[in-house]
Image (tube, rainbow, N blue to C red; front, side, top):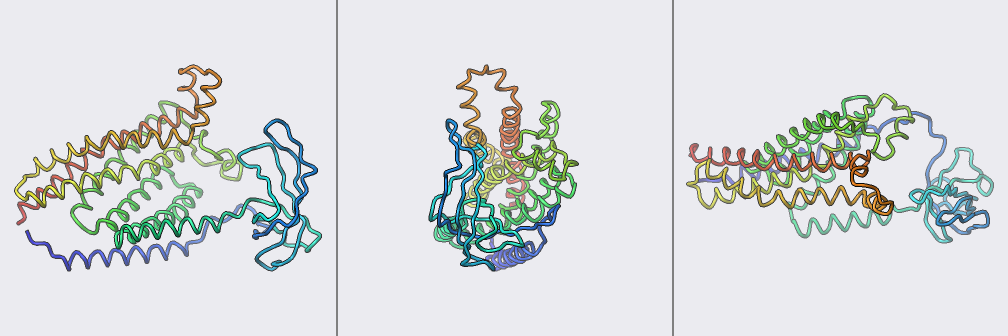
Length: 379
């Protein structure tokens, strides 16, 4: 067996260059246009003084207005001081208490006058720490993975751009969320697998198995979503989205699309694990026929599927741990828990994702066995 190293390396460089160009191109795609003209702008500010005299405490919750004095840190009003107000509505997930010295974001009206106009305090300024955390992630990925880590970083950035510049805008414009998400997953799967593994037979086998598994998940999610009457209303902020001018959105399709995106990463991992194992076996024992390679891939898949399905269960249940704790504290019966819309939605996510994982194992094994077994007859 002869491997044309320069040719493979050349393909990888070309593919990497194309992906970099796509990332740059996606950055220039306009974002979703807001439904209403924005009369305010956002700016970073530093809290210089706090007045909590109007706050009221009721048990664990606080209500009322927190009055601040803030110094603007950027924009046309940099260095100017304004009074600001922070409204607390008794919602722990949204309310925040500011202290002197905190860096926050505020909304500034177009007609704002320094020292007179009252600004609206929005959130803590988390951008600096977010950048530091992301930079640390990039550094660790590059140091540990080398050139492969660099390519993985490109795939990470490309995935974010596809979601924010393609999936979200196209879905909001009324296109089917199911097929938009499935098409995006196909694109991301191709980019991530071929970018990280190179333009190789291993990548082709992993891509084939992953796409087949995700498609099976699409069909099952659509069928069982209807049978179990999962309409997507359990998703966070869906009602706010509908009342923001997007009342024609199909919530059930958005739910299925989110499910597809959620399980695609695990499906990709499993497909790559099996394809890599079959490739190693084929390289060390070139005489093995396709049937034996497929059987080996199936054995590897059986070993990995158990932990991967548990991974999905832990990931999804972790997001709703407090809900499950509330059911336990209230003594809710098991039947009522399983029929709860939120629990039913998470159950569908977990089980459909697990079905996709279980199916992708034999599909990838068959594809890998055929691709690497076929290579014997070509030589």
